[in-house]
Image (tube, rainbow, N blue to C red; front, top):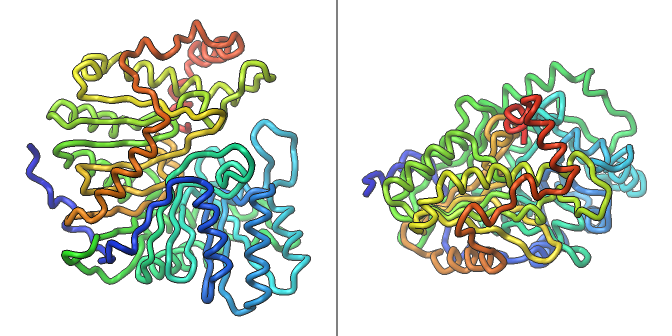
Length: 446
């Protein structure tokens, strides 16, 4: 057994009463919570997500924000989205102005305007995006890995499954708002996308480099307080880049200190070497490891065989190739029940969960995909919960059961398809990638 159960004792923490933490279990509940909170807001609304989509759900959210703003002009409302993602259409779709057209349209139609800030983490989207999460409304933080569109909010008949948690905590809300304002909004690289004229990425290239450098040194600030017997300890953590990344360090520390069990969710199976190595060591020392991944058909980029194939549709198969190799390497551990791999699939819905539970005592709530891209390129954050007095065990268990209800256990790597059984177009793509040896490069940005 490990003897480092206090390995997070050095972390500053916010003490929060356990009854002020709530887990939501569906995209519909998440949507309802967001809208109700916006409607009731009195002081501030800060929404931070990869994107706010120009579709029915995105327009619903923006409409609610503007309705509230017109009623309460003094309300402090700010939205932050990724700079690049806001100015392009969906991958594989025809060229368009992107979501920025919707932002401008709403601003032009209303007296009291709401800024939508485009945050450029890198000069090119492929090398890093705003993957920070958190919806701060008054003194509560609604945290999810979800962005805001039809799929994430289950606006029609399909949903993209994520995790959803609510923290009613003034100290956490203040800390996250302060970070967004000081580290992001006030930086010259960040521009309001509702303005009629935008600088080009090339024109702010120097500012973007400076923004990334400053973000690498930034952190959430709050007065640390130890949790009492009726409380949980929470720590917001931010990280960007490979070096001195506090979030990455915390992820490794979580896995390293586990004594009994580790439960991991990731939508894209492509562990960084550090994580894969630590998971392997944990299994060797007797820790039960459970990994939940979306089936390839539940991947964001999956294209059904009857539809026209596009190169982006090869990604779910590449992730499955990784998973099959991992399962093959760990065949003995799977057989001995030291490792459980569970594939999530529910109709034609998709899977976007991420996070880590350790020993029913620690939980990492995050948008971090636990892949090389998140590890090295994107701006990520998380909230680490330390539940030393076991107040949240029932919520932990309920959430895990909610996740597992639509999963199938992988008993052997042979359950996963071989490349030879993939659609012809997919086979050709994978063999081409392997032949020209770009698969190693791809793994670092996927």
